[in-house]
Length: 237
View (cartoon, rainbow, N blue to C red):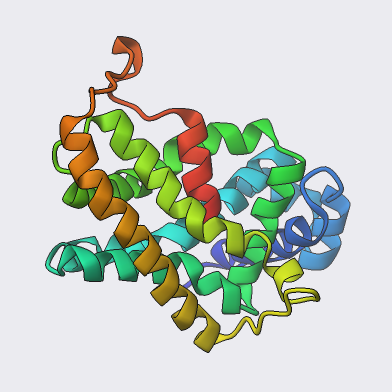
C-alpha cells in the first residue's frame, strides 16, 4: 500500500520536473512548485530539504531515466554482435528525437544546464553518469581491444556526440531550412546512417590504435574518467 507521504513526494517531483524543464533552475521558484503540486513549503523541506535538494532529485531521476533502460539491457547487448550492439546503442541515444512526452522534458532540463550550468548538476553527474560511461567504454573496447583507457573514453564520448548533435538541436532541425520529420521512421533512418558512419570509423580505428602510442592517464585520475566526459555522456542519454 502506497503511503500518503510517498504520494506527496511523487507529486512534488512531477510538478518540479515540469517547471524546471520549462523555466530552468534559476527561474523556478519554490512558490511555483508549491502552487503546482498543491502542497506547502514544509512538505518540500521535509522531503528534499529545500530547492537545491529538490532539483538534485529531479536531475537524478532525469539521468536515470535516460540511462537505466539501456543499462538494464547491457548483458543482452553483450550477447549481440558488436555491429548490432552498436546499432542498438545508437538507436537508444536517438530515440528522444521522436519523443513528445516525459522524455522530452528530461532533455529540456539538460538544455537548461547547457546554457545555465549549475554546481548541483556538476556534482551529481560525476556520481550518476559513471555506470553509463563504463557501459559505453565497454562497447568501444569491442572495436578497439588494444586501446588504452583514455582512448576508449574519448571514443565513447565521440560516439554519443554523433547522436547528441541531433538530439540537442531537434527543435531547429524540425524547422526550415532543414525541416526534418522527427518521427519513429526518422529515428530508424538516422540510426542506420549514424551506425554505418560510426562503424566505418571504428573499424579503421581498430587498426590504427594497434600501432599508435598509448595515452597513459594521470596517476591520480587513472580510475575515474574526467568530469567533462561524464557530463557529455549524461547529457546525451
